[in-house]
Image 1: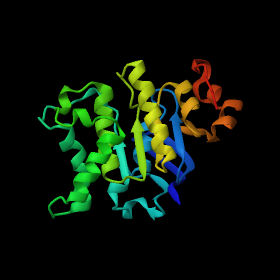
Image 2: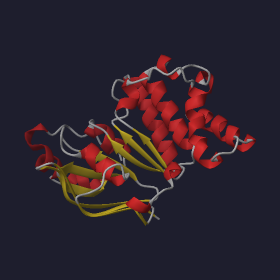
Image 3: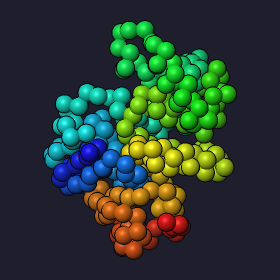
Length: 245
């Protein structure tokens, strides 16, 4: 199954192009690292992929449907840039946040034993069962990220989209977080990850999309490491790559 399919997608803020003529495809089971310099259009491209913005030209499909017609939102788990740094002021518990992932399945009905079991399983999968009754605004950045990922798992998402999820997270928690992502990907969930640390992306992701308004590379990690895409997209500011595949 094709999860996301972009063909010649262009988007501009006024006269300023953010994404120009980008074509790429994310397949079921992919772990795509989306990289590029600051202001390169990464977040805009992710928003286009998820249907949060509409392209000025080109076409986008989500799960083989035109993105404008797609209404199966529980299949997508999206964690934005703000999730780590913003705990929110509402006094909601971790369990309540994760339970939100079941609302699309329950509709207007009461949550069933199956729904509650799915919440418990999601909490256990991301190893935060012990935090279930704690308020989200009392969590560390890494714990908060796990809560939002658990919400996506409870919704039975097929795609997990993360925008710089480890900003403000300590190194130990970050390593554990990426091990979790690898495990989820191995279970069949497609992942799109925006991450500023290129070394982390090349260590963890199976495919790389390198963008600076235009797409400089889209393919497997090995071919990216061997290409000139990093220099072309970043210029002299390209970072050292640590690659362990």
